[in-house]
Image 1: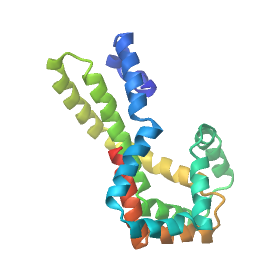
Image 2 (image 1 turned 45 degrees about the horizontal axis):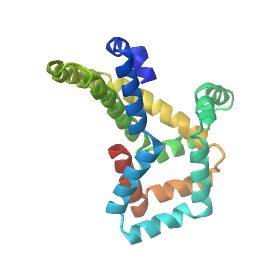
Image 3 (image 1 turned 45 degrees about the vertical axis):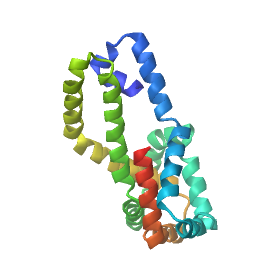
Length: 209
């Protein structure tokens, strides 16, 4: 909502009580617990016991646990700030090798990270647009939503370009302490039959959430 306020004139003109309701509703809708609940329901429906056991072999392995810890650490507010402000300067001073970049891009492709980030960004844009539309008189809602969808499609190439660069930057940060061998093991799991199924299910669950 804060970002939308900066970019949407109509949103800035809404009465304060409606803005407060929008902020509260969106915060609830995008809360971690709400997303987690929806994802678990989807995973339980689409992964059977054997799938879960196979995925857990990776997740409970030393390298699987290490990757999970790195991913969790990178989601902290402090890490997010570092990724945006400090880490790009570090990369300029000590850029990754071409081979390292290839591995990161291969992992990105295997887990569909950029594709997922773009779709979620677009869905969130439409979600905020829907919330705004519902604050308008009913006769104006359809036209507003259509305009919002058209605008979101128009800027999709920009979102994709930003998503690609941001994902690669984030992956370089998250897995910066992994050796090339450890990174290859992650790619090996991500491209295995169970890895492909596991990531497909979790990505779909995240999109639905």
